Amino acid sequence: MSLTPTLARTWIDRWDRQQEGYLPDREIMFAVIADAVAANADHPDPLVLDVACGPGSLGARIRERLPQARVIGIDADPVLLELARTAYGFELVDRNLADPAWAAALPNEPIDAIVSTTALHWLYLDQLAALYVQSAKLLRPGGILLNGDDMATAATDIDQLHTAIGARQIEREGVGDREGWVEWWTAVTAEPELATAVAERDNRRWEHPADSGVTYEQHVQALRAAGFRTVESIWQYGRRRIVAAVN
Ligand SMILES: C[S@@+](CC[C@H](N)C(=O)[O-])C[C@H]1O[C@@H](n2cnc3c(N)ncnc32)[C@H](O)[C@@H]1O
Image 1 (cartoon, rainbow, N blue to C red):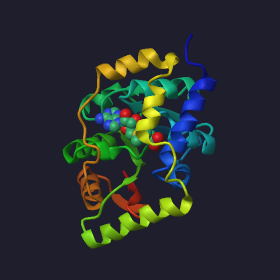
Image 2 (cartoon, rainbow, N blue to C red):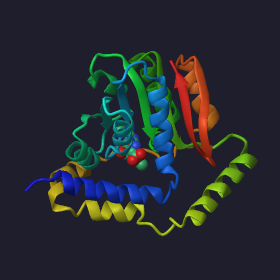
Image 3 (cartoon, helix red, strand yellow):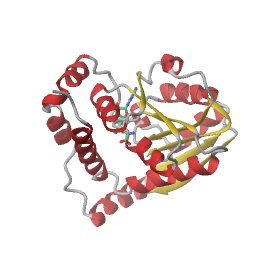
Image 4 (tube, rainbow, N blue to C red):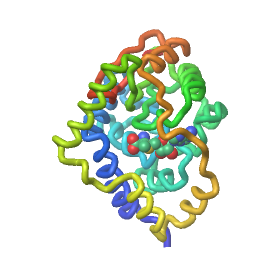
């Protein structure tokens, strides 16, 4: 027996509900990123790279918004890659983004947009800065990077407000009792159809911070240092932002 698209979609739907317990406006972030990719595209079939794609939720929303887009996802988690591969049929690249060699695994074509959600806080600042340098090299001139993630601000009093606003949003939206990260992983790793991917995942766990604490200001500085000509936050709710950088 092997994983079917229907079963993969069931696990991904459960992943999406789980993630919304932490990020009630996750679908809005997807929509803002997809709209920005569409607005910045100079042709109907942009090449889009979803960095740390997980099970492919963002790439899928981009394909809904831009059906002709070519989406490539990159991640290092065999279980999430297997779900994305089976559910969506994306092109997928299995690489650790902490190793700058990841870029060499991509097709040698200019990329129109590099997108990411809720993932780059797993990278330390030097790894993130290297990823931004690689991204600037991979993007076409005028191409766009869009990173949606939690980013603290260096202004600690404002950061406390952001944290309180985020906590209140979860209460107000009534999502605080959703299945959590640990529970989802406990369930999915018991799925018999994913046994091979789970064994591979157990083999290759890599060291990373739960949250590297890279601030919004450090993201902006690293993107500018990488050579992006315009860097600006285009959406924010509490600590959660989407930062856009135009190449
Ligand atoms: C919270 S999940 C978010 C997944 C997806 N972007 C989403 O929004 O549903 C974080 C993802 O980042 C990936 N990730 C974190 N660090 C990575 C690294 N160094 N190399 C490759 N993938 C990484 C994880 O494997 C995981 O899929």
